[in-house]
Amino acid sequence: MAKSTKNFPNEEKSTTSPFLDDEEKTRIRAELGNRVKSLRLGESMTLEQVSEKTGLAVSTIYKIENGKVSPSFENLLRLARGYGVGLEKLIETPTEEVNTTRLTVTRSGEGRAVDGIAYNYEVLCNGLTGKKIIPLIAPIGPSGPLSQDQLDQHEGEELLFVLNGEIELQVEHYEPIILRTGDCAYYDSTMRHGIRSLGPNEARVLWACTHIEGVR
Image (cartoon, rainbow, N blue to C red; front, side, top):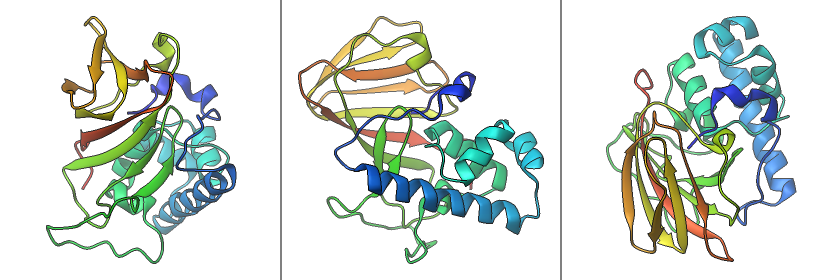
């Protein structure tokens, strides 16, 4: 779900999503940046110290904190792990109630929108802290064949379920696989992977990603 850390110079790029217009994307980046910066200041850490803990470049952390770039899914997880918090801590709103019970519900269209690099996505069930699985819904736009630089790679495992449309799943060491509405795949996220819509319109997929070890 995230762009490889080898591609930091391209972090300013993101795709257009029907979930978010430009104004909303700017607002979300600013809110996320404020939360990330507040965590760092709350821990009395410098940018350099956060860089050492997360493996992210100082310039990348600075841009995220100031709402200049949309962090990749992998980088969000790296930040969460570095601060010892769950992903929901980074994307919750100040008025959103995050609880430690074992049940939470997300109604249709009420997921937490996140402006990512490769994909814009909707995080589901964000009201529960300490999840072992991170559920996401994402629209996937049509494109040409994916290059190696467009493939993602991060710790964990993923379940991919096609809600509608036709997509091509590309996973390192395997031939590309075509998935249609109702099809699903499960794979090791440490292998480079990516998907694209094969039809003229966007496809929609449900991702269930396991947490990175160390995130709680």
